[in-house]
Image 1 (spheres, rainbow over the protein chains, first blue to last red):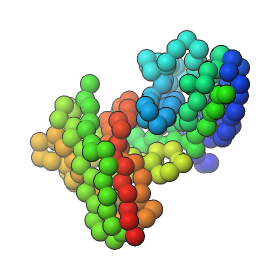
Image 2 (spheres, each protein chain N blue to C red):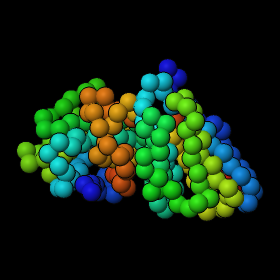
Image 3 (cartoon, each protein chain N blue to C red):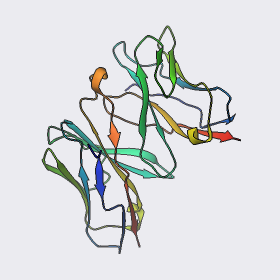
Image 4 (spheres, each protein chain N blue to C red):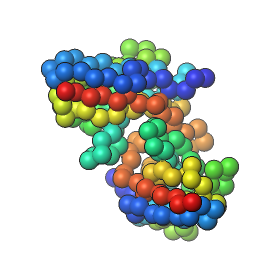
Length: 117
Length: 106
């Protein structure tokens, strides 16, 4: 397996534009997580899915952020409209079952570096 | 919610052992403790996890206190490639704290 795949790796956009980040989890993993990382706030959990269903989106900062998982092999994180303070590295991770310690290693993608100017 | 506490930073010389502490005083009896690390410009990667017993793998060892209120990640011989931010977390929600930034000097 190629691991968790995120695209694009880098995104530069103008304030007010819509941004869509994409993630392909590892096949067979039931859980998918979206994170945002900045120097000031560290690694923040935004939302996670179990079997394509959003379980906890309490970390999503504003209504401008939305995430979907239409099937087991694809998820998107959308920001509309984007603002300069959204500039960060966004990570996607997948896990078989984080509550089952025998099978709970999570795998992270390489991240998408978003710059909003 | 069970939180973890780690020192912000630690330093080591190459080839020396490193002991990275973590306090998790509110952890429940069935919660595993997981450790991840994040190398520069990469996503976090899994290091090791345990419940009550000490654990060893090819990357590190994990020593868990008898009362389970703390644990220590042990790198037996630090290398320059071990320079990273190390996080101890509860695995169910994969919520990361600020971690410990480890610097390794040649």
